[in-house]
Structure formats: structure tokens, C-alpha cells
Length: 478
Image (cartoon, rainbow, N blue to C red; front, side, top):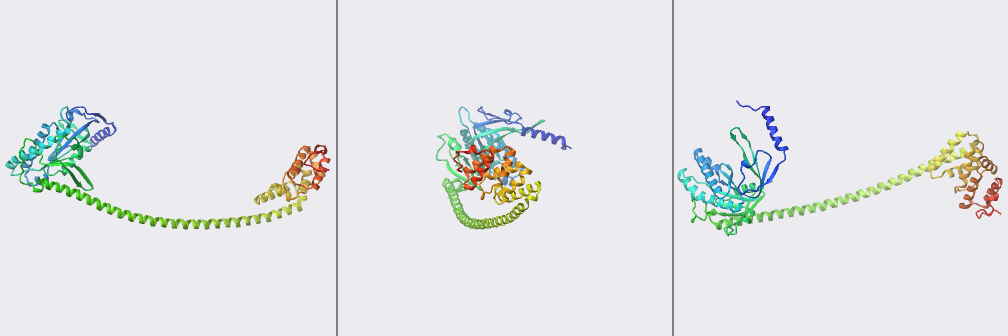
């Protein structure tokens, strides 16, 4: 008993991976005969046929025919059908490339004498003729009074063909597959073709020779679901050698009568137009409803947007009020602490150590900064004269820095330190020129009164700098 194990499964996996991972090599077909399985090796190779026409023919309602017939009878019908259709295709310059019981596929390519469309059309006419005038009379006589009904579909275009299947020992299961929409469309047209009808696409009709493009062809529309298939069709288009058209008697007058066929097509077109009209009206109503809903939603969105804007504005106003209140509260708190610390510092500075004095000065400067006061303003509130007196002996450089800072800043009131303290610090550090520059800066940029000018003049004289400022336009002392 044959079983499939991992060895076989791995072999299948390798074969599939080989096909999927190997690049497909495609070449243009340049021959004038239809490619066969021998033209394509068992590799990822394919041939592109630029002008290829494909024909399908099948037996109508073959399933019902099989149900009513014995297996032996159906076997004979299928064999005879396939044989007859194949001869029609080969005799018209084509090749049979697929036989599936009740359906036969013919492939045609251009050659030096005839185009693929002409070959396919000749084969279709031969098929319709053979079925009605040869096959059915013989079948009716020999197979229990049975007959068959056929339809033909043709399309033309660009086709890719490649080999499929395998050759296993003595069993050859290889075949060609015809990829592209041409084969698929031709198969669909065959399904839609009426009894004894040749149904072709617009592409085929455009390539029909002028001698065959007569008024026997009528525009056709066939509908299946949401798909509409458009093309041209003709019924009972027999070979020229058939002078009289015969029927088996089983076809209805509606199918045989060209006028009824025309009416049928007109009804199909009318149905399509009415269906499109109804769908258009329905879409317009839906669109109108959507527009109305859209407008309502837009109005609601605008109302919500306005409410949000109003709420945001009120929230912003509240935040600003809260911020102002918070700032005012913080300012008042800092001011109160500032004033207490300044007063405490001024009243107790003489008892401070150097470290305590510097720490308290830093605290006052920090609080003053929170209120928008400059460092010089804070020092002025602590009284420069007290600060200079305190640092005069302990840290002369700090004292000198404070002296210069007072001269170079615009202050609300001006009380200079003791003249002797200033002179002592400046001389001790040798900063006479720096002090002179600060004095000139103060007189130039700040509007100080005559009394303060005299104080500065006396200090400069004590520093021996009076000659340096004689004639200076910024100092009007004498």
C-alpha cells in the first residue's frame, strides 16, 4: 500500500520553493505555430504571444444531458464532440490546447498568410456548421435520438503561456497554462453565448477582415451579477459551403428569429439603462441625505466649537485673575518680609559678624529680585553709608565695590558714605582713577544736585584728583 511520509512532503516543499523563489524567465514568441508542451521545459520559463486568439466551445446543459443518458452514450458523445471540434480547430490553422469533457479550447497565432482572428472565426463557423449539419444528424440517428447545443466565445490579445504538471515515470501529466485575461474572457463569453451563437469581444470585431465584417454581427450585452460583458454576436453563421440553414427542431422561434434576437438585445439595453437610472436616483437621494446630515453635523460642530471657545476664554480670564491675585499676594508677602529684614539689618548691622551680614544681604537681594528691585536698589535701602562703614575695616574691597555701585546706578535717593571712609578705602586699594571714572559717570548720566556735587568735589580734592577735573564740562562747581 502506497503512503505519503515526510520524505514525500519534503520533496513537495522543495519543488514549491524552487518555483516560488526562482525568477520567471519570459521571452517573446516569434514562431507562426502555436507553442506546445515540448517548446517549454519544466522550468520557470514562459513565452509571450503578442497576437493570440483563443476560442472556447462547450455543450450547453451537458450536466442535464449526462443525467438523462447512459454512461456509454455520453462517452461516445464526448469522444465524437472532442474529435469533431479538434478537426475544426486544426483545419482552421489553430491548435487544441485543452479538452475538458464538454469543453474544448483552441489557440491561434498569426502567420504569414492569415491573422489569428481570421483563423479563430473560421474555426467558429466550422464548429457551428459541423454541430448542426454533421454531428447532430448522426447523433440523433445513432444515440437514442439525442442532439447537442453549443455556443462559441472568442477573444484576442497578449497571452503568457508556461508549462505545468510533471512527467512521472511513464505517466505524462504535463500541460500548458494560458495566463492573462484573454483566455478568461473567451471562456466567459462561451458561457454567455446563445445556442449556435458566436460571441466575440470588441477587440476581435475590430480585427475581423472587412469582407467578414457584415451586418450579420449585432452588438451584444450580457449581464451576470454586477458584471456586464459587451461584444458582438451572430447566430447560425455557417460555412459558405452550406447553402441552406437547417435546424434540429428543438430550438425555439425566439432564438432562431433574428428580429426576436434584436428585441432581446434591445430589452437587455433597456434593462441596463433603467437599472442605471434607478441606481442613479437612489444615489442622488442618498447623496442629498448625506449632504443634509453633513450640514447638520457641521452646524453642531460649529456650536460645540463656539461653546468650547467661550469656555476657554472664561477659563483664560479666570487663570489671569488667579495669576494676578497670586502675584499680588506673593508680592505683598515678599514686600512685608523684605521691609522687616531691611529694618532689622539697618538697626543691628553693627552687631553682625561678617558672615551674618553677607547672609542677610543675600536674603534681602533675593527678596528684592522677586519684587523687581535691582541689587543697587536693595543696597540703597540698606543704606550705603552703613554698609561702607561696616565693611571699611573688615573687607575694604567689598566697601569699594559698594561705593562704585552707588555712583553708577540711578537710585531714588542719594546719601553718600562718610567722606573719610571713602578716601580711606580708595587710597588703601589704590583705586583713585577707578573712583574718578565712577564720579564722572555719575555726573554725566544722573541729574544730581549742587550739594552732592560739592561733596564729590571735596572727596576728589582729598584724593588729590582736583586737577584732573578742572575745566571738565560735566562738573560745574566753581
